[in-house]
Each structure stands twice: as structure tokens, then as C-alpha cells.
Length: 285
Ligand code: NDP
Image (cartoon, rainbow, N blue to C red; front, side, top):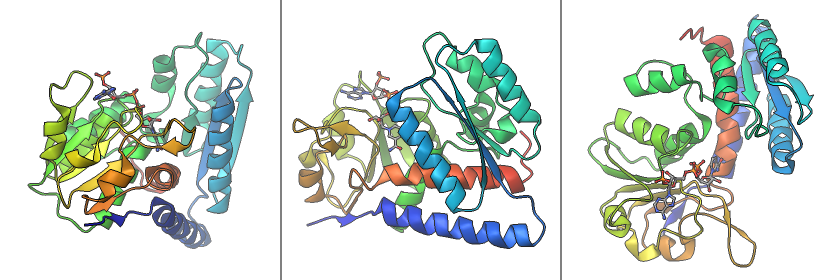
């Protein structure tokens, strides 16, 4: 058996095109043009690339982008004051503070300072709490992208066994809660899981969010399973690869996401979706 490929690049492009049409129609009908503020502190080269891609995506769908670049030595108070200003600005509907922040700044304090109604990344504890309680809120982007990819397969999640490998606050835990919300029977695995192979082998849906190249072996995969690989790692040859041994897993899986071109492009599409929701849904946590 050879898996069908879940093409995140194509799905993300469709989602972005849909958002662009919605924005054009909504703005023509008098709705406010969605605005996303991007805040970049310091000179981490990867962060610069991520933010540039996010800004470009924003402009392509017709959002306004407000961009702020602050030096690595920025004082905590100055960053908090900037965020407070963005919280008050009615033209700004979403605020994205690119992580990681310089070591001297407390990330948690900064995330808490963002108005939960403008929390485009869905990282504020109020939004994470809303997810935990099954209430309306802005969901984190990568997990939202994972769910959209699973939905592409057309499988009914209700009653299925889902295994999430990884329990971070930004991927593993929220994905697990979103699968639970959809009535899957969810197992969360992590570095202390006793028999990862056995857990994965029982899964109808596997979501790998670990950060270890090819940790998930192909022969662990249950025949026909849906495999979503969030990992972004480098293999021995320096090529980008996921947490799943793709070639071997694709022999057994029913559906699988490639790396690159799977979950990665979905994250930005969902950042745009969150910003649009924040602008127009009237969500007030
Ligand atoms: P974290 O490092 O925060 O979390 C990794 C998780 O994996 C932890 O819960 C850890 O367990 C678990 N883990 C580590 N080693 C093992 C192991 N040997 N067996 C089982 N579990 C293990 O990572 P993130 O959640 O932030 O990211 C995960 C991956 O996803 C990374 O490769 C990252 O680059 C990628 N990523 C991709 C995105 C995208 O847009 N495509 C977005 C965000 C992340 P424990 O808790 O016990 O330490």
C-alpha cells in the first residue's frame, strides 16, 4: 500500500485564496480591513525569515500589516508599552510577537500582555483556557492547520484512536485537545512514554510534534493510518525532514504529510484565518 499525500502547500494556497476573496467582499461591504501587527525583537535570522513570510502572506490577502522591528537590547517596559499601544489601536485586529524573544525578556509576561481578542497566535492563556473548556476562542495556528489537513482526508474522527507525540503548549497539547473536541480517543506521548512504538501502532491518526528527525519508524504505523508530521528537522545530509521516517511510513499509511510542504504552509494560512476571525467575529474572551 502506498499512502496518499496530504499536500499542505496546495491546501494552504486554497485557504489563502478563500481569505483574499472574503476580505475583498467584506471590505467592499463596509467591514474594516483586517490588520495584523508583527513585532520582531532582536536579530535571530530564522525569525526574520518567518516574519517576512507572514508579512508577505498578509499583504497578499489584502490585510494591512503594521510591522515593528526592535533591537535585541529592547527593555521589557518598552516592548510592553508597544503591545499596549497595539492593544488600543482599532486598526490592529491581530498581534503577533515573534518567538523566541531575547533571553532577557520574559516571554510569558509578553504573551500575557497581548489582548486575548487580538492574540493571532492563540498562545494567550485565556485562549488556551477557552480551548481546554471547549469555549470559543482563537486557536493556535499550527494545531488548526493539523486539523484542517486531517479534515482533507474525509475521515470521521469520532471514536478513532489518535496518538499525539509531543506535549508542548504550542503544538502537542492543543492538537490533543482539538482532537478530543472532535470525539477522538486521544493518547498523548512524550519523552517518558514507556513504549512509543506500541502507542503509535494502535493509532488511526498519528500527529508527530517532537523535533527529532525520523523518530517515528515506518513499521510502527498502522496500515491505513493518517500520519501528520509537524516536525521540522535536518537529516544527516542537512536536508529538511520531519519526525516520521517518511519513505517507510508512506508504505503503510493511508494518508501522510510530506516535510516540507505539509504542516508548515498551513501555519501561516491559519494565522491569516485567526486574524480575519479576530477582525470580524466579534470574539471577546
Ligand atoms: P518542543 O521541544 O516544545 O516539544 C517537543 C515534545 O516532544 C516534548 O513534549 C517532548 O517530551 C517530546 N519528545 C522529545 N523527545 C521525545 C522522544 N524521544 N520520544 C517521545 N517524545 C519526545 O517542540 P514543539 O512542540 O515546539 O515543536 C515540535 C516540532 O514541530 C519541532 O520540530 C518544531 O520545529 C516543529 N514545529 C513546526 C511548526 C510548523 O509550522 N510546521 C510549528 C511549530 C513547531 P517532554 O515534554 O517529555 O520533554
